[in-house]
Amino acid sequence: MGKHIVEKNYHRLDPVGQDDMCANCSTACKTSCSRKLAQSVGNDISYIIDEPTDKEVVIDRLYDVIIKDVDSIPCDLKNQKLVFDVNGNLIEGELKTPWRMDWIYSVISNFLSEDSHLSGTKSVRFNNPEEDDQIIVCDVVSYIHRK
Image 1 (spheres, rainbow, N blue to C red):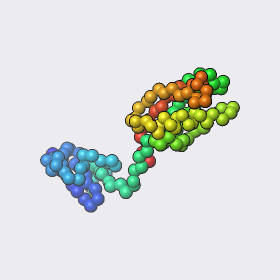
Image 2 (spheres, rainbow, N blue to C red):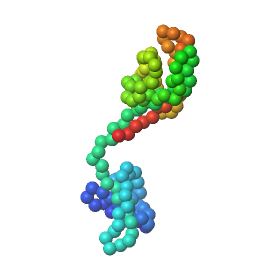
Image 3 (cartoon, rainbow, N blue to C red):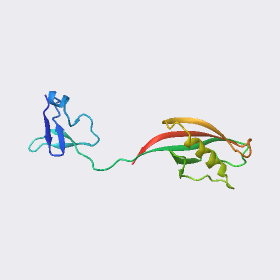
């Protein structure tokens, strides 16, 4: 059976397997976010070392909004991508259009600020509030981004 060794700020498991001590280990050796192989001194046996991390992980929910189709808009918007945060603020991207179309940013931002914030892809239809015949259909991809 494997041997559980706790040394200073890390612990390691003998590669043969886990013993009963490891099964009830309070250092949670089974769930690790940083693992690497290390060589035992004077031996060719590798060990898995879990090192503590001092970095704080920042988790953000982001939305990729990709325009898939347009109706009654006389310019090509297809496949253009915008990235928004969870509050509906534009993070990245700008529409390449011959004139300003601020209504697109506005309707997408309003939709995202009221979204359920679950990961996945939705196909959403947006209308220009000033001209109902102008429509864009977008894939809204919601995901978690870790920094």
